[in-house]
Length: 402
Image 1 (cartoon, rainbow, N blue to C red):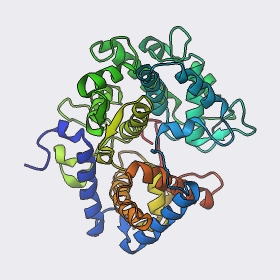
Image 2 (cartoon, rainbow, N blue to C red):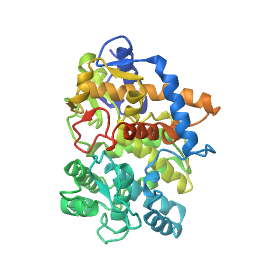
Image 3 (cartoon, rainbow, N blue to C red):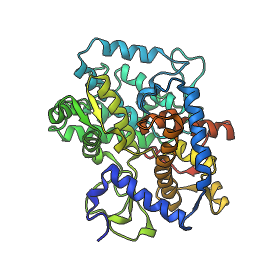
Image 4 (cartoon, rainbow, N blue to C red):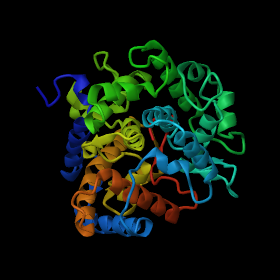
């Protein structure tokens, strides 16, 4: 019997860390597609420190959360409209409205591709990548596109009937402004609407914000990250594309993938739960903005996506045994992509510990280091390499992974 007796045990942050550690150990033992250069980790950590100090010189760092993308230096009007809306509500209703916004926004947050950008009402130039996706989803939300009555909230019926044309209109998609994975994003929103409609115990009013009521009923004003992440995994597991890891005894694992070198059964699955963890970080901030306390956030891992993965690749912490593979396009279930993502999880923990030491902040949260931080450093390195800022390895994305 391996570490995991059944597939449901893979629905945890601990499983993400432990299975990623197994993959990382395999790379360090000379197998797989990547070489790990441990001597490069210190320089990588120092690069993260330098970026962090440049962005947040007082080290007053918010979480790496969707809320960072609702405002940019060039675009502030949409966030101002949101804050004005929240300002007139009691704290719990503000949290519910925040869940209504953040959950669909995060589901729309997979990589946009290098050609897409969003023209915000007060920005001189179009804004791409995650900031553009965040602003576009916020604009749709404020415009009532996610509700049946046209008000700024989200309900099941509106998501179930949202059309590709409506999504493309909101995200300003056309032949000259193509967005990667439109169908995959729309399918996630449809699935979210269908799941809420079918689960009136969790969603009695058909709104994502109903989860706030469940959290407070369970935990009061102090919510653990474990309970928040567990609720996200429990509530949202039905919406992810099925069958990614093959036969898992009817347990839908979402962002989890079978890794053939580990054989069969639960121990052969490497879970990442990237969007679920990104969502949990974002909902933790939403809860705190609504007057609740969230504890134990370092239970969660770093995010295994192409900015953090690009950081370890661009700084030479990892490299391909066969450099020609950098020119190929790889599927999300390929061994190479699974290994890259697992290495990202494990090495972010090692980098984070060195960042804490250099900044003399032993209690600095991983969520703060990601924001400070590793994600920004990975992005800066990508744009230094190419004007498009594209990832160093090529993923065939369906808009639901990263």
